[in-house]
Image 1 (cartoon, rainbow, N blue to C red):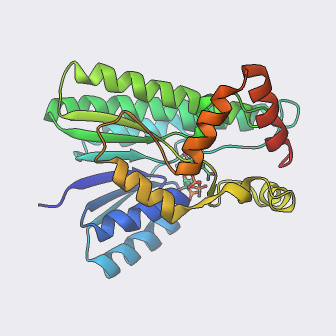
Image 2: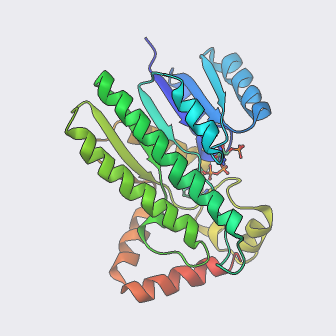
Length: 260
Ligand SMILES: NC(=O)c1ccc[n+]([C@@H]2O[C@H](COP(=O)([O-])OP(=O)(O)OC[C@H]3O[C@@H](n4cnc5c(N)ncnc54)[C@H](OP(=O)(O)O)[C@@H]3O)[C@@H](O)[C@H]2O)c1
């Protein structure tokens, strides 16, 4: 029988590429997005190309009532890959309160509800894998992407802590914090992307969504609680950790400021 996987953020970028990869690998797909049109297009393509089941849920993670009513649905799966996430470049004076609140609602509040609920379901069924797509931005402060990086730091720590808590109830359930670095997707707004391309900032280090999707699919079989995708990102993380914190924040801030 095919394994059932629930993927959030399946309609674009890393989540979409992962969805195709897992369809190819024979998983039954349960996908979450916030656009009915994008979900319908994804479902048709997946079902035609791979003859794989693809069930869609339209949920706006920025609306807590929608998240809660989605979670009332007693959907049982073997794997949850929580990929949906948003971020914005800009400092505290540029970003509006609403923009920063949206980042926290999607990346923190909705994520916590989703992960907690599926951890409980997986413990009850005594099996399951939760892969949480965090970011290398979670590892140290990121001036000019501060709320995003802070929200990913929450997600990273929450995932590691949840994994340890879950082990108390079941040895067959695991939680993996997966951290990609810069990836070529629609994540950044076009005007930010344009500035980054011009200054050769982010694009210089970018991996493709397909490479990252492959890394995440492999991570599902890992026994590690945290996986950083890509050798360059792993190396960069180690190098930056060697710098004093103050200098590390300056270096990262200077790099991201080019996209502001
Ligand atoms: N790109 C990078 O450089 C990078 C680096 C490290 C980590 N990540 C993380 O990787 C994950 C995927 O990002 P990506 O690069 O693939 O970006 P993306 O192409 O913008 O995809 C983001 C996905 O999240 C969904 N989403 C956004 N807001 C949502 C909401 N309110 N409700 C429901 N779904 C929502 C989007 O739906 P729509 O299709 O409707 O927009 C889309 O499917 C994110 O968690 C991001 O933080 C990205």
